[in-house]
Image 1 (spheres, one colour):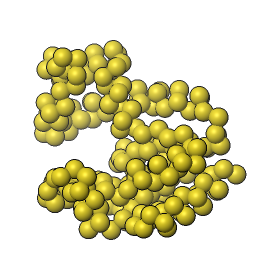
Image 2: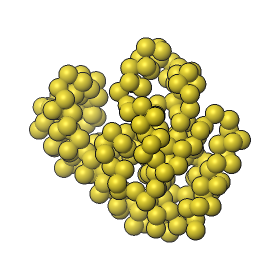
Image 3: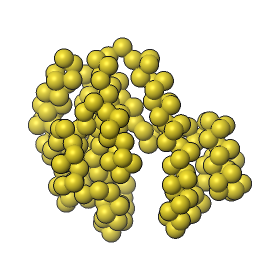
Image 4: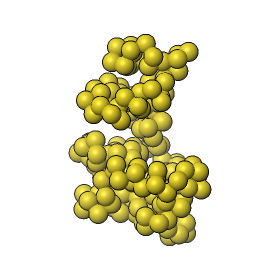
Amino acid sequence: MKIIGLTGGIGSGKTTVLNLFQQQGVPVYIADIEAKKIMHSSPKVMNAITELFGEEAYVDAKLNREYIAEIVFNQKEKLLALNEIVHPAVHEDFQEFVSKQQSEYVIYESALLYENKTEGSFDKVILVTAPIATRIERVQKRDGISKVQIEARINNQLPDDVKKNKADYVLYNLELEKTEQAVLELHKIFSR
């Protein structure tokens, strides 16, 4: 079974592309969503996070995201330590996910695939991209946040030019019809 990595910056349209692959019957693993589930359900992970950030890390058994975000934003070593707790748990969960699949390939989606230096774990990597102005417009509509906030997030991710040089496939997600065609082409390639 092939393991395909899928990545792209905020507002690039990764969710649209993932939905198109799912319509073809492809199993999809969204790392960010699964990481959040693990941080709320794994006693081992929850204990390690509490040990790292203190009792305020969880309020009523729910991750205190604002509290943790404030800390990791100001202390890079705490962010690295959090990643050391969460990433292995996500990796283990993904391996279990893969073991249950019967398809030719699965897709692992992570916005920070290159930033986390995990690209070597995949048979192929797809980069979903769109012009910056389009991405900003999409995120403003979706999240209702300011252009400045979106640009700050974009600036925290590797530039698409760097990612394009590393990716096996670059999917320009501007017109839905063309995106659908590109996904069908990739589906044929990966299904061989």
